[in-house]
Amino acid sequence: MRNKLNMIGAVWMVLLVFAALAAPAATVNRLGVRAAADYDANYCIVITDEDLTTSATNTAQVISNLFAVSSNMAVELIAMELETEFSDDATNAFSSVTVTVGDGTDTDYYLTSTELCLHNDPTYVAYPRAPYPGTTSAMLSNVTENTASFIAATPTLLTTTVYVGDVAATNADGVAATVVTGVTWTAANAVTNLTKSTATVMGGTSLTQSRKVYTAADYVDFTFTPVATYGLAALDNGEVRFYFRVYPIR
Image (cartoon, rainbow, N blue to C red; front, side, top):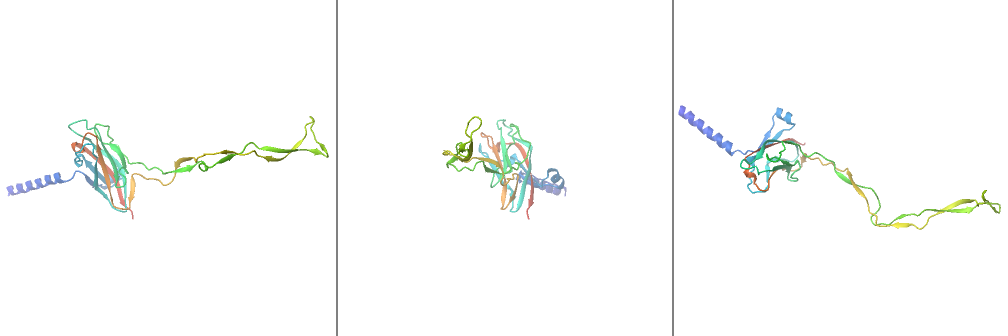
């Protein structure tokens, strides 16, 4: 009986080991109530060095089938957290591993290039791209390009002598008195080749980064890029976590 139990225990141990070896290191974890409150998120994506299998040097690897998003889902990246720096035990020359987070439309929509390598001042906590307003052009001058514009010269006053009866009136100095009867302008001076002047100002539609409402199915993509002389498969250590808030739009 004891031998039979030992045999059953051994079989279960083999199955557990096999399952551990066969299971992918990358995981999509639904956070519990406490963790969700702590991180203001409901999902945590965990990616380790074991998921980075590209051996070609200077070649990025995109993990694109891990986190699927369906239509009418809202996705927001809350933060990235570097749990273990990425490194190669054999050399310190493996000096850069960067990650961007995006989707099928924009590879760094959620997170721009962020350093994860032990030997290159890694970023331990990173926040997503901040929202920023759109821009539009404001016209500072409405002069049509290459159309002549005219600037008038100094005006000339038309005057006439003041008479008292048939005698021209004069002042005490004997200067004839005059009165203004009109204004004339000399020929205009043409100014040509003027151009419109514009400036870029804030306005238009706001572009909200770090969050998106999907109208069609897609994947959240995680792109890892190594230093030029090494391949990602050479990494021996590394774990990074991405916290997302995901909810349906009805």
